[in-house]
Length: 337
Image 1 (cartoon, rainbow, N blue to C red):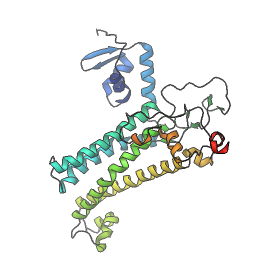
Image 2 (image 1 turned 90 degrees about the vertical axis):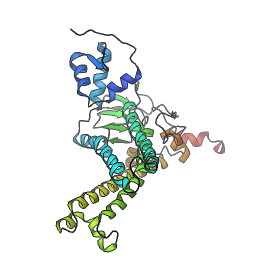
Image 3 (image 1 turned 180 degrees about the vertical axis):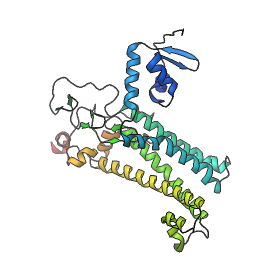
């Protein structure tokens, strides 16, 4: 018979493990069937409320849509594998593995990659509406009743058909985490995309040059079709299967760079206009406050620092339930008084 240990003061690190490390089968089995979690040889037993809350949050974090499952798998599996191929297979063409020049570059790349995944984690953990949003029971001015989730939705909140809930200042649904990007987690999404964009520029440049070194004769306009149409070159036996794989890997890096560039541009475009993606589609322009105020509204008062670390606080000027409009800002501006 298992000896039960009661620890009500679980540390934040333990909760983080329980809430985020979904692939570990043993933890989930103990949570759902035994109500006992075995970590590092120590048994933790939680009361029914704690257990129910963790089970509920775990269930919500698991992607359910096919698109979300595929996208999350790409982000958690394909991107790390591609990163390892880049640093251990491509970069050694110029910098010996574990050499000083290699470590200098890889250390910077690891810093960027760490920021990408920590921002992703924070984006999931906090969510678009914060950790514990409290909506009023009565409809306030500017609020509207959502018939889908049966709640009073504040201004700029929209219902997500995938998450099946209204999200504060909803921007869009992010399939790479099966979570909506909104008021409280947009800074983490923007920071993750920004760090990934910076990371992909040098990685793609390495793979581009690497792919050309695999082509017999090197770079030339006459051989460029082998890069842009590798499947035809393979069928014509102009390139080998190994060369084909090198070209496909280069194309994959380029695809990631293009997609991340689009995501970053889309975010900056909406921030510039004081809009979310939803408001852009609905042509809402009431919250255009100017570039600096728009940045503070979306990314917080310390927005330049969010790209350095997801653990740097950047307080938002709004609680997600009320927002300054352009009309209110102009009324309070001394030059209009």
